[in-house]
Image (cartoon, rainbow, N blue to C red; front, side):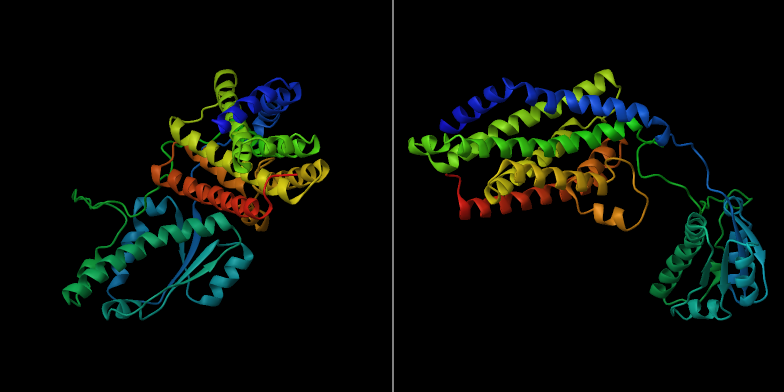
Length: 394
């Protein structure tokens, strides 16, 4: 079959080129070793518990919910996370926040119990402090109380009951008499372990994704060289369809990229001790999506730009920008750049691999992989449309 014949000779020609072997196989391993070793200290994460938050509470409500809320605040689990202080006015809460005497404030309106009993919307006012993490900690702790109140309120509304007796028992600890009342404050985890990825794991995923995209640039050079060397006209003169030539050359480079990914994954696992997780089929699908995306970019760039210098400039600039925005060189803090990075191929490729390394739940891995698949398919459709318009010929 012409496609496989063209793919075979494309592979043989690449394997005989020394710079291809150097760039695609040895260079990634060298970069992973250098970056993973040099920046290993940056990725050391100490296992620390959440620090308790100083919270001011203004409770104007003296209704039926007051007793249950006091029990919630007095529970051992709540006391691990909150240091409460009762205040008398809202102005005092703001003043203490500004002076650094407190870190969070909660104001409970005087009609809170009445509103809940009537089945109406009821809410507290939360005044945030200067520390983002402590704000989130306090909000999550109080959210456990809200969720329980909402749950019981919904049950009562369905049963058409106005009694608040169950709400009075809302607290954060089990009864001293041994009742099986679970704690409202629970610290969970998304991954299967509490571990974090190491510097070697981080840069193994980052460099693998980056060089899979670079394989598209090498493919674009190969496609363009057929025009420059005037061998494409000879191929078009043979009894071979134009699309078969393109698919054959793309297939050959895809097989080389798959081999590249296998070498990088195998070598880093064997020599560097990189843990890629246990879902190797999913890891293969991630690499395949990245390869498909890079080959699609190769077709688009090659058909739109006619010189090697322009192809190199477009690919290198694009890959460098995407790698930077996705945190491929160094993890980026939360902010505008990180939000922009979430629209790049590198980001979803890296994050998918990180979830495998951390042993995350299947649904989380599937979410990242699905987005990556959609991006790869979208780029493939763009490549198909560009090819339909331009074609692969001199």
